[in-house]
Each structure stands twice: as structure tokens, then as C-alpha cells.
Amino acid sequence: MNSDGAEKMINALGTMAEMALVFYRSAASAGATREEATAITQAYLGAMIFGRGKDAGTSGNEDD
Image (cartoon, rainbow, N blue to C red):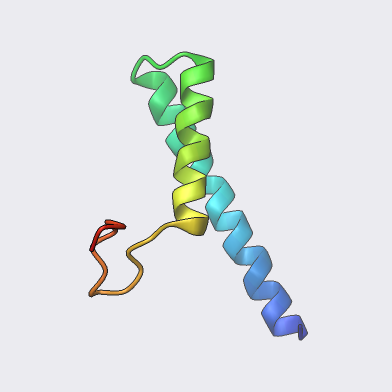
């Protein structure tokens, strides 16, 4: 990976971390317990990283 690619990766990870923190804090302020906020933030990050439906023709359902 060249330095430009490494910088893009670092920026992407930083962006994801900031979004996850905002998501966690929003869940907590909406009344979720620490455990609940952590669990849904983990699910959020998992969907961001491994999520389906990236293509316009994909609905996200495995049955399609």
C-alpha cells in the first residue's frame, strides 16, 4: 500500500470511529443502557463493514 492509500485508510477508520461514537452517544441519550448502546453500536459497525446492499440492484435480502 502506498502512502496515499495508507492515508485514505487512516481517514476512513477515523471517520468510522467518529460515526460510531455519535451513534453510541445517541443511543445512550435515547435511553439505552450501556450494554444496549454497546450492542447496537457493534451491530452498526458490523453493518458498515460487512453490510449488504452496496449495489443498487441488491435489496439486502438473502432470499432475493
